[in-house]
Amino acid sequence: MTKFTRLTIVSITIFAALLWILEGHVVAEPDASPHAPEWTAEASRVLVSNSAHIAKSPALAVSTDGSKIVVGYRRQVASEFDNDLYYAVSTNNGVSWSAAQTIYQSPITSGQQLALAFSGNTAHAVWIEDIALAYARESQWASNTFTTISNPAEVPGASNPALVINGNTIDVVWSEGDITSDPIPDIYHIRSIDGGVSWTAKQKVADTQARSRVPIIALDPNNSNKLYVVWEELGTTGTIYFAQGTASSGTDTTVTWSSSIEISGSELDYRQPDITASSSGLHVAFSNRIVDNEDEYNQVFYMSCANNCTQSTQWHMSPYNPISNQVVAVNGSDPFFIIPKIIKYGDCIFTYYHGIDTSLEPNELIWGTNSCDNWSASEPEKLTSPNSNRSVNPVIATGAGDWIFMAYNRIEDSQRRIYFASSQDAPEGFKGVFMPIIRRK
Image (cartoon, rainbow, N blue to C red; front, side):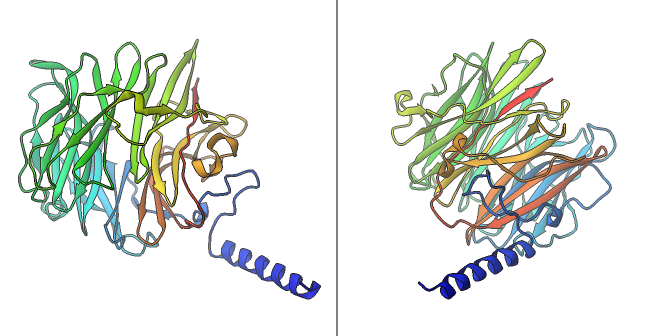
């Protein structure tokens, strides 16, 4: 290669990099994860909840063909406990968004804990309405109606719903207790095979002695008749449990659940699991809560299972655990610990979370890491900057055409707003998960 040729190649490379920056993308820091997506620059991210009202707790879903993105959230109406559910739609990969519209305006306490998913090009929502579990497909949103799919008589009631959809089959899991009949919350499942028009009777996934909380459900990408659920069992400390559901077909109303198994061990205090399923197996991220005098920490752990996952011996903790390579703290009590979100993107498993870099400003950032960069062996990516704003509660989804999307809460002068970021960048091998430590003063 001649000197002139080498100079030409370098010049073209520099020009391409500058063009990429001018298009509004982030250049990773020298010590950041080299496989991290090139997210839209923070200053160019789109405000989704364009209103003077406080917006909280984003939920995110992408249509099957990737042509439609929905971001839902709670909008505070009056008091902190008076919230209605709103959403906005983008049909151009998040470049622009519709005006905010209601999923449901509640005449009672409020709508809480929203979860979204798509069937084809139709969005579906589940949430907690007072202490009941509510469902509404997108066509019901404009008419301000919903279907109650579980209605416990007394507290603690239903909480923390999650759903997956395959065609017209919708599977929902949640935690529920009733002080008059079954006061210790258990994990429940319910199914619709006609797109939410009718529902089976609810059934317990597991009946345990501890409080069963925050379930997450995943669908097997190789076999749509298999469902996987992880949740937190909270006694004196927390442990992570798993169960597998099996149906004979996608139109079978009966799902048979395996015996629940503890996959985390009980020597630490494990909380807030998340699960994703890939062609290579199951991936679970969760936190470990540590209380040291007046300080509170959270570490994030990762474990996986390649096959026969109903056997506890098939689950393996990562040798990198805890996979955090920095300490992050939490500002205040809302939220007061992290909930790691895990997703497969390209060939990697990614985890995103919020937390304070204790060596910088006392506000949360959004962080991310991935297995393709050997988890804690590389510095995590930073998606937001440590300034006067707090960035918390990221949620993530992928879309057709190598897109990855994120919605998160930005808190500015007591105002909470929902922002959106994206990247179309799944170049080389990907395969990983990340975990953090959180310290609360």
